[in-house]
Length: 195
Image 1 (cartoon, rainbow, N blue to C red):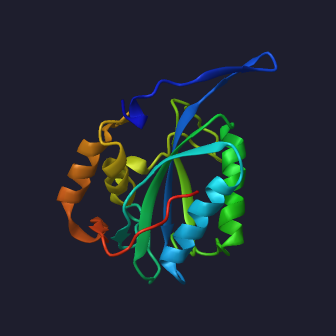
Image 2: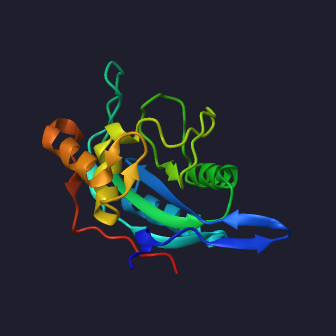
Image 3: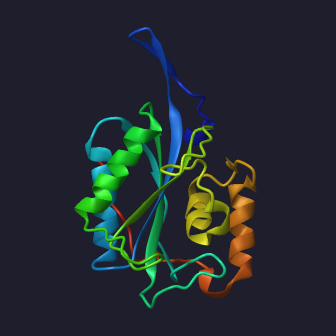
């Protein structure tokens, strides 16, 4: 049985049932020491209790991305990874952790689609759906992003991205489009798994 085949674990605590959810994070950096930024982010995600590490994708390099019709400021390529974890924390707690990590690595939000030391997105949180603008789940543009799909497919190709299909199929289709959005696997770069 693989990690992705596990059923949610229900544990009674204080009269409430806590459900374990599979959470998928997409991380990217294109400023400073990109690999070091990603490593610091992965370490920080798992430094605090509440997340159980499942897997980290290989490192990929991608050109900056913006939806059609949007302007991308001039900037360098990103290093991207996907991290999969299990948690019993609520989505709001994980969002707060993600924002704190971005802030600690000097994430600046001055220019839309601009360069950044670190960007962390919560792609999916179990089967939870949310239209909350602070945290829309699943991530509304994950199906358009090779830099999410391709690394994720290295870990969980058979998982379904709700409303869009199998991650492996979506990744293959995005890579087949080629062009500037294609991902280049960087086997010369690697991250350490959290302790």
